Each structure stands twice: as C-alpha cells, then as structure tokens.
Image (cartoon, rainbow, N blue to C red; front, top):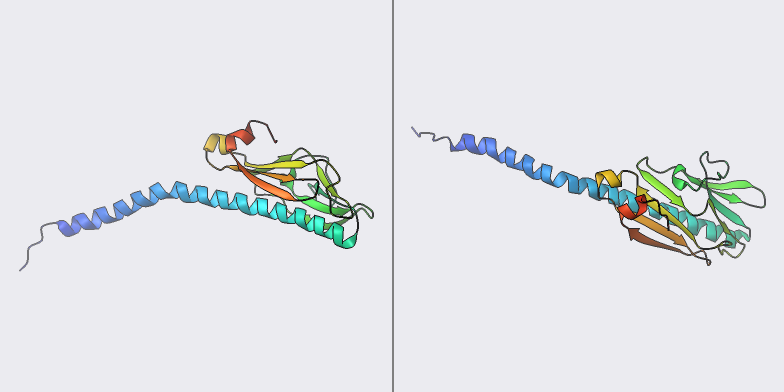
Length: 172
C-alpha cells in the first residue's frame, strides 16, 4: 500500500489560491481596459454623428445644426452634451436624427451648445472643442479623456488627454 505524504492536499489548497491572487491582481487592469474601450466607443459615436451631419448638409444642400439635447426633441442651451444630442434641419426646425445620452460615469462638455453646418458641409461657427471625461477619474484614478475638435471645414480631430486636466474645469 502506498503512503500519502500530504502533497496532494497542499496542491489542492494552494493552486486555487494562487489562481485567485492572480485574477485579483489582473481585475483592475481589465476594468480600466473596459472603461477606455467605452470612452473610445462613445467618442467614435460622436465623431460619426458630426460626419453624418456634415454629409447630410452637403447632400440635402440645407443648413443643419447638431446640438446638445436633454429630451431628444429640441436643442438645449446647455453645453453639456452627455445628455444626448440631435441633428436639426434649421429651415424646417425638425429633428433629423437623435443620439442617446452617454453612460452615467461619462461627462461630455464643450465651448458650444451646437455645431452648425452650411449647405456645403462647412462649420458655420468657429472651431468647436468638446471634452469627454470620466466623472470619477479624479477620485478613482485612471481613465484618460478625449478632446474632439471640429474645424471650420467640418472635419473632426480626436486627441487623448489626461483625466486630471479635464477635471480641473478646462474644456479647451
């Protein structure tokens, strides 16, 4: 008969413990990766809406306005785009398309409450800069923000920014 020296019991207890420790160490990194992916997805959705608005203005040869909207029916005067935004035909004052609000942890603010496109798809106002940030990044750490610029030609540019820079109150 073979005798047991207790190695099986040690392996049985410590292998799962090591697995739990490794998973615990990796979990914050995975959580941060998910946040960054959500940030990228949100900014891409906004950039696509700007491109859509610009294209529609050129194709329909009409002035259109992309603006922050809390209810999805009319433009708000607020510069807080995190409640959602809409595309409005300025001639008929009708809603062309609506985009839903952002996840609660994300803020999206800027210098302007709207972006207007002329019949050629050009931005009718000065360069517009909007900043997206994680509302809890100052206390939770991590999660860089994004800055979206819409130039006079109606073209967009996205830059990554530090979280702390955006929470300091600056949007430019």
